[in-house]
Amino acid sequence: MANAELFQGDIALISGANKGIGYEIARGLGAKKIQVLAGARDEARGQAAVEKLKAEGIDACFIRLDVTVPETIERAAAWIEKEFGRLDILVNNAGISYFDPKPSGADLNKVREIYGTNVFGAMELTQAMLPLLRKSRHGRIVNVSSHLGSLTFASQADSPTSQLLLLGYNTSKSALNSMTIQFANELKDTPIKVNAICPGYCATDLNGNSGPRTAAQGAVAAIQYATIGDDGPTGGYFSDEGRVPW
Ligand code: NAP
Image (cartoon, rainbow, N blue to C red; front, side):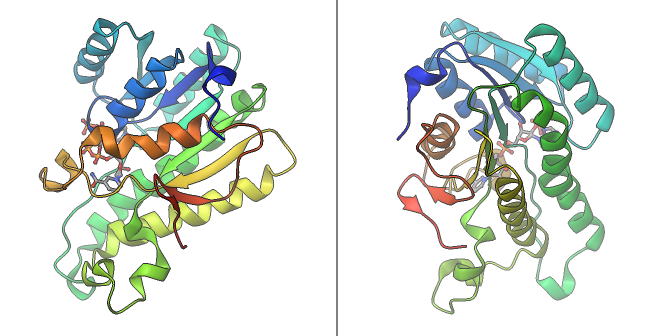
C-alpha cells in the first residue's frame, strides 16, 4: 500500500528531526526523493542534522520548531506557506519522557511537561499545518506513538507494558492515539490520512539507549504510513508488523 512514486518531490515536516527516530524518519523520507523540512528546537543541532542529511544527497532544510513554543509553530507554518504553498506529510515525532517511580509518586509537573510536548505540541502543530496539508493532493499525518500508549496491552496482566507504569509518558501516548482518531474522523472525507505508529523499543537518548532496536528500525513504520497510498488506512494504530490494538 506504500506508494513511493506518489510522493516524489513532495514536502515533509518532521518534528524532532535532529536525532534518534525523527532523524531516521527524515533520512528515510529523503531517500524517497521527498523534500525534508527537519524541525528542531535547537538551531545548532538542527543544522548539524541537515548537513548530515545533505551529505547523503538528501534535499533537506532546517526549520526551527519547538512544539511547546507557539510562535515557532506559527513561523514555521508561515514559512512553509511562503516557500511551498502546501505541505504533504507531517510527522509528529518530537517526544519526551521521564521515569516516574509509580503513578502514585509521579511528579505532576513532569507529567504536565510531558503532555506539553507529546500531546499539546502535537495538537498545536497539527492544527497549524492542516491548512497546508489540505492543499496537498494526498496529505498524510503520522503521529509517533508507542506500544506503551495501548490501553489493551496496559490492561493485560501478562503484558510487559502493564509492568511499566509511566503515568506521564504512557497516558500521553494514549491521548495521542485518541487525538489520531479525532483528526482522522474529522478528515475522513478528505484525501488526508491520519495514523499513529509504534516504533518499537529502540536505543535512543529517550531511554538511555537501552532498546534492542535501532532508531532506523524504529523509523520504518512512520516512513511506511507517511507514504501510504490513497487506498491505505486512516485512523489506525500500527507497528511495522501491522495493526496494534488500541
Ligand atoms: P530522542 O532521541 O530523545 O529524540 C527526541 C526528539 O524530540 C529530539 O530531536 C528532541 O530534540 C525532540 N524534542 C523534544 N522536545 C521537543 C520540543 N519541545 N520541540 C521540538 N522537538 C523536541 O527520542 P526518540 O526515541 O527518537 O523519540 C522520538 C519519538 O519516538 C518520541 O515521540 C518517542 O516518544 C517515540 N518513541 C520512542 C521509542 C523508543 O524506544 N526510543 C519507542 C516508542 C516511541 P532535542 O535534541 O533538542 O532534545
